Image 1: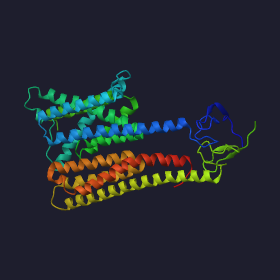
Image 2: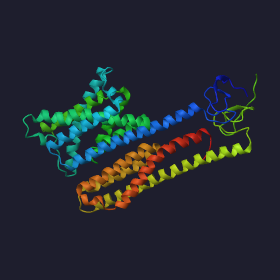
Image 3: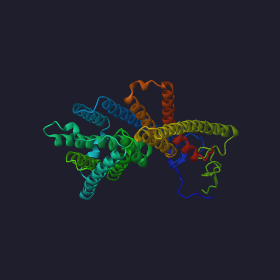
Image 4: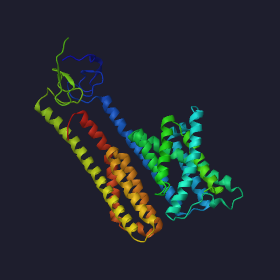
Amino acid sequence: MQLPNEEIDISIECHRCGEPQKRGYNFCNKCGAQNINAFRRELKKDSNYSRNLTNLARYTFVILALIVVSIFTGDDLYSLIFWTTCFAIVDVIFGILQPEVWSLFSIKNIKIKPLLFVSLFGILSGFLVSYSIEKLNLFLELETYNSIDIFKDLEYSLISAIVLTAVFPAIFEEMAFRGFIFNNLTRLAGKKSAIWGSSFLFGLVHFSLLSLYWIVPFGLFLAYFRNRYNTIIYGIVLHFIHNSTVVLIDHYELF
Amino acid sequence: MEQNFTQCSKCKASITAEDVFCSNCGYPENADQEEKDKYEYRIKLKMNVLKDAKKKLKNVKILLWVLAGLHLVVGLAFLSQEITFYDGIGPIIAAVIFIACVFWVNKQPLVGIMAAFIFWVLLQLSVVLVDPALLLSGIILKIVFIGIFVKGISSAKDYKEFSQKLRTLNATT
């Protein structure tokens, strides 16, 4: 049996015995020592894995702790402002620690067609979600939740509601789930797992089992766009339009 | 110079008659018995790590089935009583999520276990939200569950790495 193109390259030699080796060898054919470069690659892979897992665990823990504490402290307007600011500060701090996330805000390759698509999808999903939640709450005899209620006493209630429930969450939730969590999960387990994992986590942090039916698919859609275009701008636009639509529906009591 | 090639008896890669070790998997094809024993010992060590990782992943899957079963029973019990429909639906949804996580762990152990762990933690916190005193109820069991989840997460890497390595070396567990 003859092997083509596998000549011995004298420039590559075993680090232990100095025997010339074939290109891309894993073990020395004379002394059995592992290729030092392959060994270093394995070590690097190991340390990268640990670093990504630590980053992911640290960020997820901080975000979950923040959300849980915020739920415990009530849902009045000042709590909302305080916790939204905390969430933004945490994202900025982690953005400094993991600066690659800022490149996801790039608007260089933004195209008009996908932008129009996500905008229309945002309006449609806003209507669908509001309508289905209304029907589901009626069916289960649950108290209906109005996103505008806590802003009612303010002079500019609609603008305040849009800023606090559409602008801030759109930017910082996208940065969190399609930024930090997606990036670290991709490095740890691949893109498919990152899409599913970040969407599931996105659903969980909204702290409502019943809402999972729409939040997880919504998260999957956002993660798909993040993965396809390597930017979170489409996600931010979609998220903003979706949340704004829900706020406007609640404000004008359309359902 | 013409060389006679033969196959490595472990990974089936092509090697020459002069090669003492296979350059692909490191098997001491033409070495003495002592080297072969050393090689087999290293493979056995890898297999043990993989076996241990599999055991820990299995524990996580058993835990998830138990949690799913418990939530299903609670949900069905609530539905059969005069408690609101929502009280019954919640645990049933949780049971379905735990079952989905079992399949997720089979496909992608790390992400599956992390998702299940975070979900379980949030479920515990939602219970504490209703009654903070419940934080300490069954605390030993909760610590055991956390231990199983954390060991599962750390084993997920070993499982992936060593099953890949042993597959490359053509070694069967």
